Image (cartoon, rainbow, N blue to C red; front, side):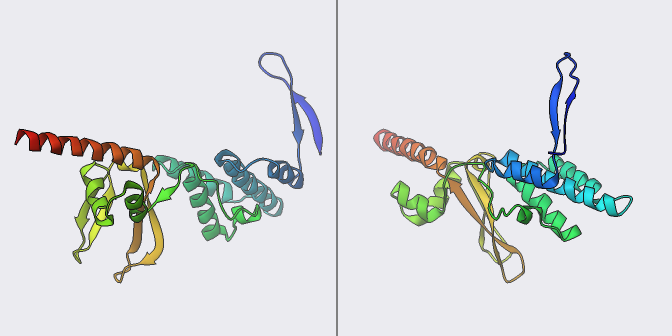
Length: 212
């Protein structure tokens, strides 16, 4: 440990602090579980030490300004949590050829929402209905909308309500026109919502038949 000291607080109680070297700081953080907050701290710490090394070699560096600017932009566009961490790391790789997450040996991030993601086929199995009935039900329940592209292929989009229960994922594949192939997957929380919707629809149909 390089230095231990005390800093005066407003209330008069001194706060103890310790100045750590890069190796000491990295070792201390490796003892912490990789929550989203810890992952973000590791990323920022890695960038800070990189900046310090660059400053030792040259008078100024654009890395800090670059990182701050990108964090502010992501905040404006509502990019937070793991998405922000990955986006900032990708920007650093592209701009400075530096992978901060790889430095920490972090090939995966802990999911912020601890729920299983399900495909339409898996929803059909859990609901006990046919696969081709799931998407129309998701539309009727107000969770997604459908449209057709220039090739008359159906495209699904999440509604505001659907965004609480599903995510749009980039599959890494591309259509013949170069546009990315996307897939909607649903959190397991949508199952009970759809069951309630289907139960309500059954009641309404029964009532309609009785009145008819």
